[in-house]
Length: 206
Image (tube, rainbow, N blue to C red; front, side, top):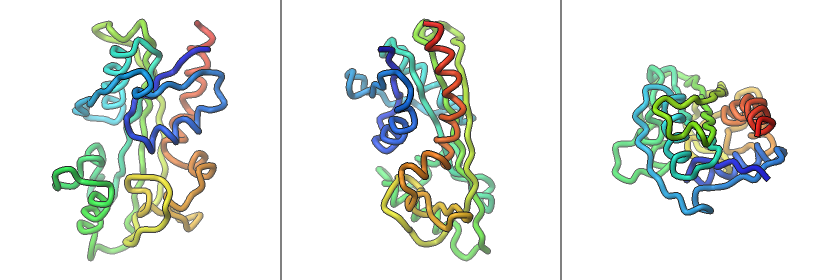
């Protein structure tokens, strides 16, 4: 069976990606399962560039077909922050997801609501034979999920900013969605859905 490396060490992302890709006739592999432990400097200027950096690093280390993603939360009142720096938004050393949420809410405190926002995600897919080329060819797919930030946390599912990101049409935060709902509506789900035709084309070529 063909293998696809999910290039992330984030357990929440791994669970989501495994669920999103479970219907493909491939074996999904995590870095931990093959002994790959990498921290990739995310110094690109777009989500796509950061996803590509991760895909190349994990693809070179594994020799496997590799899928990486990068995503971020963009809040309109903060001119698109935290954006590319969503995971590094809080100034606290070793900040947790809860720290990042509280820091974001502190920045929005007193500003008029609704605090409109969106999640964005870019997927990068790298074939093994491209990994060590100076300019590897990378496939991309993208997804966006609009919503708004709310001042109180709701829900026990998800990770990151999910408990304060409201999908207004459902009156649920991302953390209140079931896995099935999230895998229909989230930015990552939409990016993965857009990447599946690319993956199927690659698998057919092998």
